[in-house]
Image 1 (cartoon, rainbow, N blue to C red):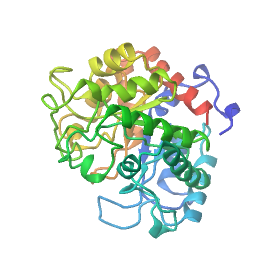
Image 2 (image 1 turned 90 degrees about the vertical axis):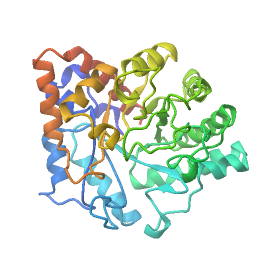
Image 3 (image 1 turned 90 degrees about the horizontal axis):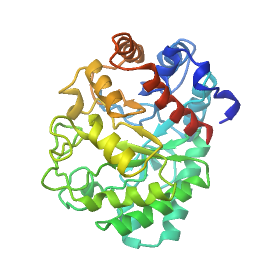
Image 4 (image 1 turned 120 degrees about the vertical axis):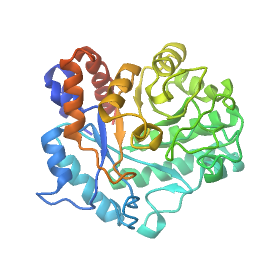
Length: 353
């Protein structure tokens, strides 16, 4: 990704700056001149897109991914249509969470849990580089991994039971997450540590609704984040839509100023990009309107909002997102300086790719 194409915050209009705050999902696996995603990129200039293999809304096998050649062609066309280089993201953790599956012609991958059980950091780094090479060849520059959640609850339907954690000890998770990030760095793929402040103790799934970790979460779940932030390896973090009454009595972590501004930014010293988990998960979408969730997220300190458009029949349009934030600026609820802060972090991250 050429740095020269990025420009600076001051060169962008307010609308263009707001567009950078969004990572959008879309339907389709190729691009024609009249395709919706092409129009979205040219007209509304999002910060990036996210790719999925299966269409979860219509229960169809093909969403954005059919084959290595097709994905390469798709990502090339997406980047060519954008004035500002796009973040092209994917969930390619390994194991059960992999969008680039062998059935589409991509290499086999290993889950975080299996890597943790093998407990060989050199092997984890090697396998991570193997995943990152696949992404690089496909034109994907952002992987929503590694998972820093501890497998502290073996009954967790979304973490432990899907083999998404390196282990139950902060020390082991830190060692293998470090190796995983280094493997991706060798192929110049941006990683994203998740799900802050820790999803491993939760039994419920925030895709389905409200999840409370007040009585199960433990402070040592922060240790992998603290270590990797201090080492400069954790440059992007994804939030969890979980609720912890002692952290915030009103809103889930994704929308909490105390969690993002105080705990993550101030206490842990994180200066990178904070991205939300999918804002269409029911833990958010059942309780907040689009404008409310954007207002709360910006006030809490989110930099990027992810709308995967693959969970609900109602598609979220980027134009509606931009208009909602423009209204918040006009109403004096959000300052343009606040938006500039996030865009500056986003452009800095893009400049490294």
